[in-house]
Length: 133
Image (cartoon, rainbow, N blue to C red):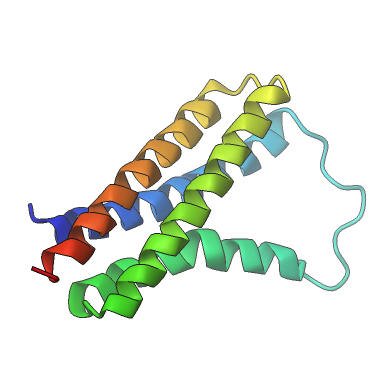
C-alpha cells in the first residue's frame, strides 16, 4: 500500500470512528443519561451540524479528494486539518478520562481515533515530500 492509499484509509477510519463514537453516545443516553425533558423546537442545533460536518463528513471528503488531487496547497490543508483534529481528539480523550468516564468502549475508540490521527500526520508529510523529489 502506498502513502496516498494509507492516507485515504486513515481519513476514512477517523470518520468511521467518529460515527461509531456518536452511535455509542446515543446508546449511553438509553442506558446512563437522562434525555432532555423537551425536544429542541427548531430542530437540530447548528453546532451539531457543524461538528458532524467537520468531524465526519470533511475527513471523508478529504479522503476522496486525495484519490484525485495532489496539489501542494491541498496537502498543506490536509496536514493542518489533521494537526487540528488530533489536538481536538486528544483534548476530547483527556476530557473523557478526566471526567471519570467508565464506558471502556468509548475510551478505546477515542484512543484509536487519536492514534490513527497521529499516524496520519507523518503520512501526509511523507506524501508532501514524495512529489517534491
